[in-house]
Amino acid sequence: MTSPKPTGSRQAPRRPVCVIVHAYYEEDSRVRREAESLVARGWPVEVFALRRPEDPAEGTVEGVRVHRLDVQRHQGAGLMTYLREYLAFLARSTWAVTRAHRRRRFGLVEVHTLPDFLVFAGLPLRLMGVPLLLDLHEAMPEFFRARFPGPLAGPGYRLLLLQERLACAVADAVITVNEMLGERLVAQGVRADRIHVIRNSPALARFDPAAYPARAFMADGTLRLVYAGALSPIYELDVVIEAIARLATSRPALPIVLECYGRDFGEVPLADQAAALGVSDRVRLHGRVPLEDVPRAIAGADIGIGSTRRSAMTAFSLSTKLFEYAAMGKPVIASRLPMVERTFPPDEIATYEPGDAADLAAAIVRLVDDPAERAARVRRTLVRVASTAWEHEGARYVALVEALAARGR
Image (cartoon, rainbow, N blue to C red; front, top):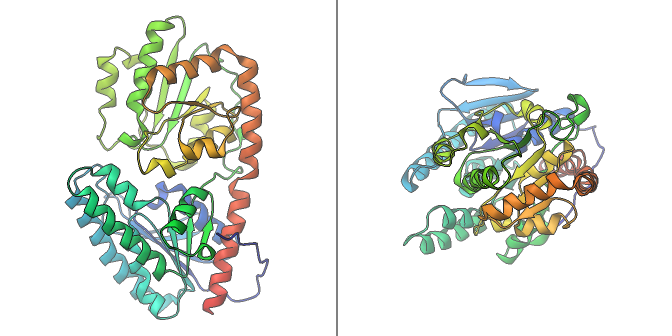
């Protein structure tokens, strides 16, 4: 696996970078960070993404031109619905990008996954000599096996391993988000020198605690937990609510509230669970907020929660939420997963056994009851986050794009 270094060259004329992503552009923090980093370096960027019913077909976001194709997300749906959605977006994006290339003459095309086979939307441009960069956000075979267990899991897994290898073979270079995913690709036969690890870390310029009113721990007498992300089963918010219910019984004098910010696709009945456990007044579901408002939501809380259910897919995962909470100067509690333990030593973020509400409740109590340990964890974690912030990773990403684009010219 290689680590690109900034080239510093700004001499050659820059043809637009084309980005294809099966997501709502405004909601995908990684895609936005990459696109905005390129714009900051003087690269024109055009993104082809999903379109929500209320969105215009085209627009500009922070200097990035966004083309929204008439395909919508059906998160939590069945296998055939996912497949139809993926294929519809593949067809529409292939056609739209190929047509746009006639006018814009793209200098590079970058495809973000899932799905991995979306890379073939960039194949017509690749055949015309345009460099093709693949950004693998997740391990799609493991995602499928975790999301759709049953008789199709085995054959589907093997088929997706094949399409993953083909996707990597089509691309000129492959990006992934952490070392374990990179090592996994090497084990699958992808050459190490074609893989570039660009961590999915936040920009400290955006997650700056000094930009928001400071909150002392439990300043208003209430312990406020914050979760900012998708409200899907993978993030086991049901376990978090159960932990809150346990604390309501074991520590009735500790007022505790969970502030949830994220899109709810109705996969998990969180409000019903909170009501059944008698903690509706302690669980607040705010819905999705714009990415720009996430730092403010974190600033108003006391502890950041990075809950993730253990599965074949999450064994390779490391949530960006952990870095965002830490960057805002908050103590963090996360599921004890391989990439979490590999990234953060035990004296930095606090961890609990995935799925174990009692262990999570105990981790919360330890942070509440030991101010010295809590403050030390915050200091140590902030140092680590600063060393891996997007200000560093973004420079390496831009360097890779510039090198590939120069090769295409």
